[in-house]
Length: 110
Ligand SMILES: [Zn+2]
Image (spheres, rainbow, N blue to C red):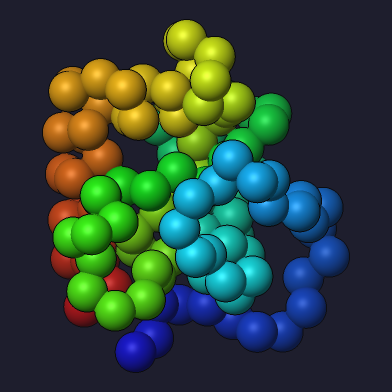
């Protein structure tokens, strides 16, 4: 499967080490592909800042491995109310947005 990830090194983004708060197995390749797609901005509000990989779908719904289309780079931290990661993780509206966004990502990659 090709999700548009280009393995050639691109030093433009500082790599962040995934925090222990990130649940789900996101490989460095998947993380970097999503980060590249986001251009370093929150994929919902466009803010530049601390981005976190947020799952767009409940983990048990993912068939096989988590791909870049299953996550979005969102502003965090997820424990802070008002951030997009928090919104997606803890509100019904955010959850809906996430599933819709995921559908769009998959539609684009086909
Ligand atoms: Zn945001």
